Length: 125
Image 1 (spheres, rainbow, N blue to C red):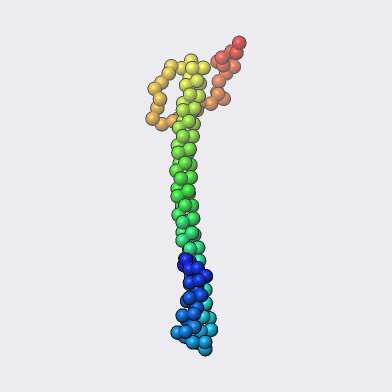
Image 2 (spheres, rainbow, N blue to C red):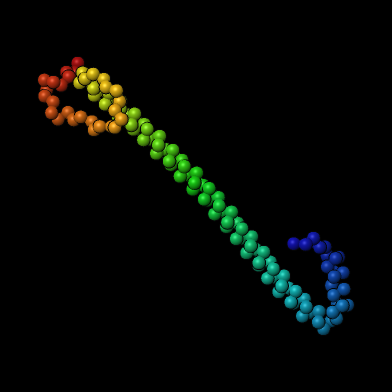
């Protein structure tokens, strides 16, 4: 915590012994030890709280990034599905020999092949 060497500690102990006297020095040293212990615990608690807050902030940022990535993937997949549906519709129209129509604003359901006769179905080579 402080940059105090052994020789400086000896000087402080001698001054304290002279100023306080041999009777009160152990009591003052004990009290100072308790106060320093409390101070160290307080500092370590503050450090732990700061680290927790930093980790929480990092986790929130990571969560936001993941949510944004998920939104982008959802949009991309939706666009690809829509283009695949359009391609299937166009292919069905070409196979049936229907004229091409401009893409509608709404996506209608795909026509079913249940009502076609075998005579109407295209023959495979």
